[in-house]
Image (cartoon, rainbow, N blue to C red; front, side, top):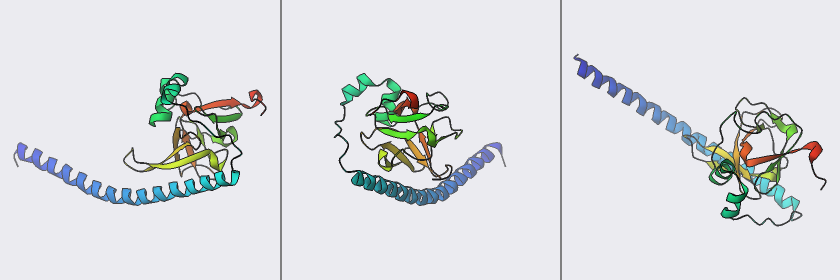
Length: 194
């Protein structure tokens, strides 16, 4: 076979393999999409139930305007919390933080995670196996990648925090992979008495 025909045939083979893999992957993605939606829905139902049980003991939150947030937050904090951006792995404030304390939402100061639930995931982002309370975070299915993921946001102000995956340690099996830019750390011995 002449070189030009071989090259064309090779392109056709690559194209055929790509289409086959895409079709097979598409079926997998449909199954993953259904599973992800169910997981996010169940997590949201648990958070809603916990919020209902807690009642209205918490003050009503008045969300800041976009202009107020731009003044309060730095660029990466704003992009992560308001535009669902992702900060760089291993180059963020808390990925390797080993101090005892709590992680609060950078926008509304709601407590989100305790250092007792933080673990070394090797991802370069702070990872936790559960939130501080069921009603601390909310969930939504995210389609920004090639597969659906479960996005995690602050339940009070809706600031984007990161994503939750089913590859974490016991006791929950969850890995809440969070952005440092969406949180502030309150060290245990420096926490104000409430």
